[in-house]
Amino acid sequence: MRFTSVVTSSDGVDEQLFTLGETPTDIPGDIPDGIPGVLWTPEGATGTRPLILMGHGGGHHKKAPDIVARAHRFVAECGFAVVAVDVPGHGDRPVHEEYDRIATENQARVAAGAELAPLIADFQALVARRTVPEWRAVLDAVQEVEYVGPGPVGYWGVSLGCGLGLPFVAAEPRVRAAVLGLGGALGPSAEAAARITVPVEFLVQWDDERVPRAQGLALFDALASAEKTLHANPGRHAELPAYELDSAVRFFARHLG
Image 1 (tube, rainbow, N blue to C red):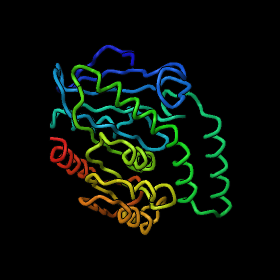
Image 2: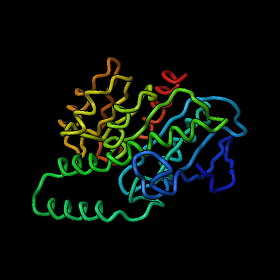
Image 3: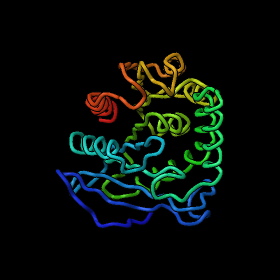
Image 4: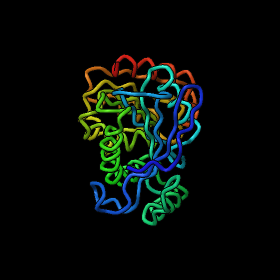
């Protein structure tokens, strides 16, 4: 892990860019290019603290405005560390030819009348085969940072961040709580949900044009967590209410300490 920027501070939150790995032999999972990420911590932090990994949405990146806003709240109000990285083909990552080809083919299928949700689910399952080992490597590296340390871990991700987050949370025993949502119970997503037992706050948009309501509710039902809460709000896929962030802050404060 190599920090690639100086520390910048804003409203009590430090931000620093980093790159993890540069060749396939540097980190697990045969990752052929470095992973660009950003770490937020309380200004002048020392010692161990909880860490939240955030997964961004499709077409976005590690410093998308919604990611930055949530990270600042988690850091400023809870004293947590927060990390986000660009998923393959996004942000500062190079173009991924296979993923681009599949995305283009899926757009053509939808234009020809195919249902969108199954295509999204299959595509996210493909990308997750790469992001799960990447994100586990990111946790390993960030928890080696002196002012983060091996504290409890949470995960936040909706839409693409949910599709990639489900198999990650299912596979990663360090994650103690997760906020997920805007995803459906199709194939690999439902299978991953059935392996998740940590507390989950799950978000559904009632008028979601990308993920049919019934599939979102079915995904919530598929979660094996003994403690899980469904938050359903009116609106389309991208219209998640801002006040859900207030709830996420309380949720992680309760479960990560």
